[in-house]
Image 1 (tube, helix red, strand yellow):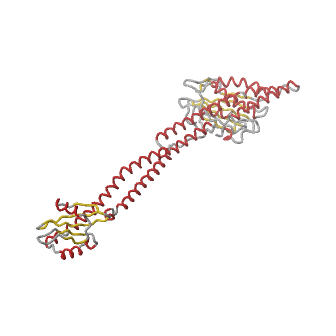
Image 2 (cartoon, rainbow, N blue to C red; image 1 turned 30 degrees about the horizontal axis):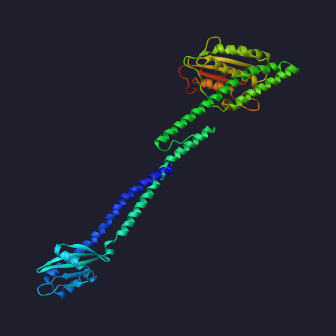
Image 3 (cartoon, rainbow, N blue to C red; image 1 turned 180 degrees about the vertical axis):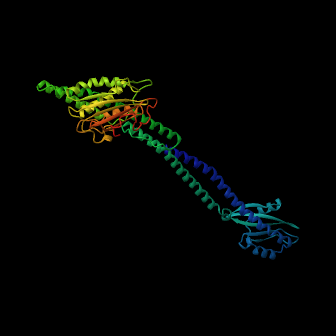
Length: 457
């Protein structure tokens, strides 16, 4: 595209320069010739007064010699026969007799070509005939300044061509570079470089193409992130039954069958952890709860606590549940809330020792519902890192996705999640679920309806 634009601009500029320079050069040449011949006519007319006064040969010879053209040897005077005096010539004649006679007969100035230039024949009427004054114009004087003018025109034309080519090249670069960047970004995106983007520069059409490409790339990244995140979330939900299997396998005692069961459970748990870690770099997605979606948080917590209480009894854990006596409606899907509660309780069983007590408290207000999960374990050293997706993965086998599932559930309603120190001495996770039409709004920080003695925020 760049070279095509340069070629088109070069062809157009050359045609324009030729169309104007050639006629202008011819006009300059003609003007120089007219100027030289006009000066010759002026010199010839200057002898008219002298011829009207005298036709004496000696006087005319002196007059010719003292004139500008005569002094240069470029003037001649043809005097006709007067009375008994014969016709004569003075100066340096160059024109032929036929041209002189034709000038006398026509009675007007004329130009004749002679070797080395031109002669201007100027007639002057006398009392007894017509005298003719000849002025010689050399070829060099006729073309004086023409070569210089043509060189100037040629230089201007070449400069215009070079300038137009340079401008066309710059315009081509301005058009081609954004197109090349767009092609490169498309190639990078096709090779899996999801961060490839195009600067929105260049002509309007290319800017619009860049905007469309960037929007498409963002959509691709978002779709891939949602897919990875969904895979991670589904895999993480498998950890709840795996935790139960692991705890049950630990109580089977000794024997080949029990050992095989424990090995199989550990292998399955490692595979699930591998899937979660592979997909843990996905971006957070908004919980998909449509208009009118919701569930009873109290009923969900009662159901899940009935499930986890059996394990707690086997491990000698003291369990306390409060605030679930009455229905507590929250604007989230039941499956999402079940996954969040299981993630919180699963963390308690996974990261605290047997016999560690824990509690679940539900506080319901007009605009929010708060779920507090507290334990008497060692606590979390870095709560901020624990809330970051994937930050908790390490040697203890944690993927760091449990709290992220809880956080995304809260943020989908405009709430938030905080990790602090509980009154039991361990960790307290506070899940704030916003009620009303504030879905997707920035989460509120802090609350007034919860127990002020817990949650250091």
